[in-house]
Length: 234
Ligand code: TMP
Image: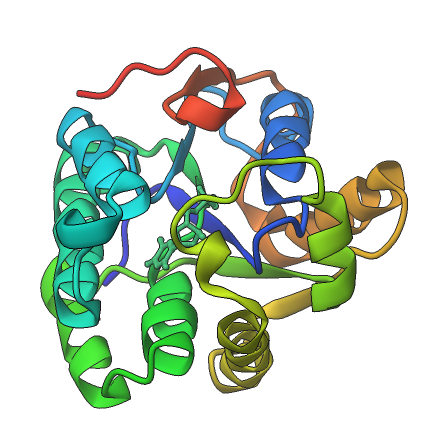
């Protein structure tokens, strides 16, 4: 399914540096000369890229004890977040010819709920198509850091419910990302390096993959991701 805009996704385990790289790409892309002059850049994230999604994010990440979703409910809540996000933010932006960078997308569901929780990967795939209407990223960058390094980086932060699932769960998620990167033709970025080097690698990959799209004029930027600054859902 083609759209006039371009859709870039960042994937990886918690602490891999996606949010930092999203911010760097948000500053760089509109001045990169890659985007058509009248295109805006939308940066967004899952879960939580819409008003409804912010509530779903809280249900997913902050509910403990009796309020904790069972794995299947968790999967369906991520799918609901994605359906709303694609319909309200991503698809309209791409249809306008804007560019979208998203912090996590369908790959995270396969990695965390599929490989991590052990839910049926075929069901997850079907649900992916239902929630996205078949929309796929033009380019997925997988920021690869070893789990030990990601844990070290998150050492002084409070874990959300998924991050707090423990080492064995996160091990399976890490293996899942490796497997998915091969299956889905993601581009691996070695993210165990200084931030500036990772940013340069991401830029180079984006230039190579998407350079046929633009001109040298500047384009605008819109932020819709709570973790990267001002947040305005539809
Ligand atoms: P974030 O910390 O990158 O914003 O992501 C929130 C958490 O949600 C993170 O631990 C990964 C998890 N997650 C899933 O388990 N499945 C999904 O489909 C998505 C998008 C995120």
